[in-house]
Image (cartoon, rainbow, N blue to C red; front, side, top):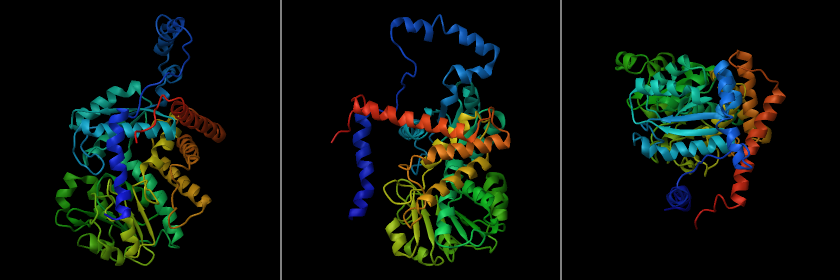
Length: 444
């Protein structure tokens, strides 16, 4: 095993040591003072009856008198966990807890993992709708396709709080931000680049949609699924119309050159490769990268192992390489998106999160990195660039107000200051708990 491979395997080793030590990554904490037992009469019975009666008269007061305005439910059925597939709701719970940790530390949002013991789309929709009175937003997570498309569409139509599928919208937002800066850095034009998307699941379908919204001509996209490159004359196109209409729609409007074959054919001459498929290494071969256009861009984003190791893609001629991992440069990870996007949506009590709100976040992400100075190993902010989150929240909130999907209106300065304060408080609280020993240091 090389030193780079040893580095890549280290997070998995530490995860197996730390998870049983901490027995979970999140807990509830009080946000109101308890100075004496007399305070219970205020926060609980009998005093609590008064805010209950006020909410009964005006249901919108629930956002003022409870923590609902700062809460998100993380919903999964365990059918598509990371790159592991259908491993069940219990096995997916560590991922959902990790998501809740990121919501809190990066966005100042209280998120609650909810793993469902059903795979039925209609039951999932029914359960999530029934949870609406308790939460300010819904984050759908690791649900298999094409079911995930249907569930998201239905819930966005039928609920009055933001419903978000992070594997679609979050991945698309951050990937488009990375795409904007990568293409800019290599000196190519958005309207000219050929983009090959390996994998035609939830992530890449959403990425394709957002790339088109940003200005990439649909015909310049080539999507590859397990049966080859999508195009309007593929043998299974009629069947696809009924099995996966979202993929079918992409097949009709992409691949203007009618490229046929598999991954190697789709990558030949392409400027950009965006891989969101199955864990590697070896899914993408070095010689296929070599066959791409000069100054090529490779995003190998499968977890836990990318489709091709970044150093192999570089050796094959790629100018810029990104992965979904935090231990390599250019991490294309949803964690740069959902905390700030939800922060902005919650702070203006948006009814939904639109594609335009996602695109505003992507452009702001790209802008933050550009201001710091782009390089081959820095096309996106990192999670350490924490100022990105209040900035992202601000543009999302302002776009929600502009589009008329916000319950309340605020100025740009008000949104930024509120987001900054809430995110900083979450970080400071964690730091204080560590300093005081309530969160012990990890075992050696």
